[in-house]
Length: 405
Image (cartoon, rainbow, N blue to C red; front, side, top):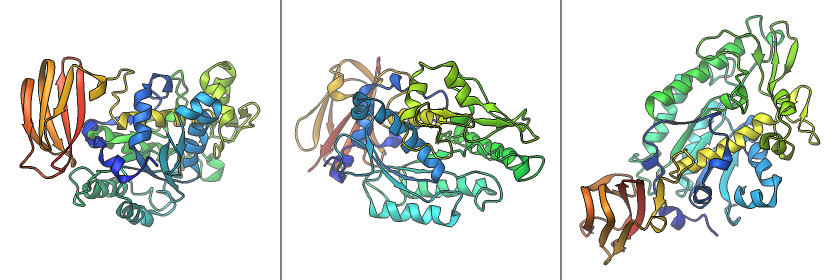
């Protein structure tokens, strides 16, 4: 068993790495850039609560499963499971509530799960369409307020004082062009989906949040071509639907962006992954060729690969394809030796610009600049896990130590 509380208590608090906004979008799909050690670190350290609609399966049973099913190498490397006993896998507890379906359940359901699972350290909720006739989507500010309430209660320094703080993932909704024939001639749902997504996206950028941009992963092709129907301003030339199809205002199908891209790029890894989805809800093309005339699995693949990019970011990867946050054993230029139950000695080949000590809640309790050698005495502090963070000439290095046991 690998997912117990003891293991997670030894994890670096995720919030230490989330000082600035992290936007997971179409720029974050190249899973080959993710260092292997951070993929493993995510599997070892994250306990994820993910509540979602049918659209939410596009991430897990869509793209993440496609990676697992593609080859035996990928099955081992990108394994995830909702069974905490599964060896060498990322644990995701999946539920079938979503933000759109029942707003009243969002906060209490999260509280109920977190109160009974102290080992959980990541929470994600997914939308099922994000326009007005569903009760919650008419009030995106309320969603943002509720997320801040949960962060204030269960996040770093929260009122619940959790030994393992929780990181909350914000999310945009899927493209929603059910065509004017289904609503009215100005396609209100398409317009309001764009506006609501833009509001959530901007809030996350302005307030240093972590966002999984579900919409962007539908609207952009792997080469960066934009097939969306607007951004901050609603000026569509056509209406994009969640299955990558696009339509004109007379309810005529113009094509499917995902299918067209895969047909033009048959040897792309994203095209090759598409037939291996288990369930790409609302977009399930024919398994033998990965697409049908009106549906595409491409965006499901991109959501799955972007999810792994996000999980690696949560455990310290900088997103640049380089390992800048190293474990102590991976960077011998910086060593922390334990001299006793409460004494530790920092030694560095070159002076560190600064060394900081954090407790399990992510509160900085000590700091010293230009350190080559430093004996740290934690006798006056409570027993538990402490994080020693050093800034060297090569980047940031973290070491985890338990004191006063």
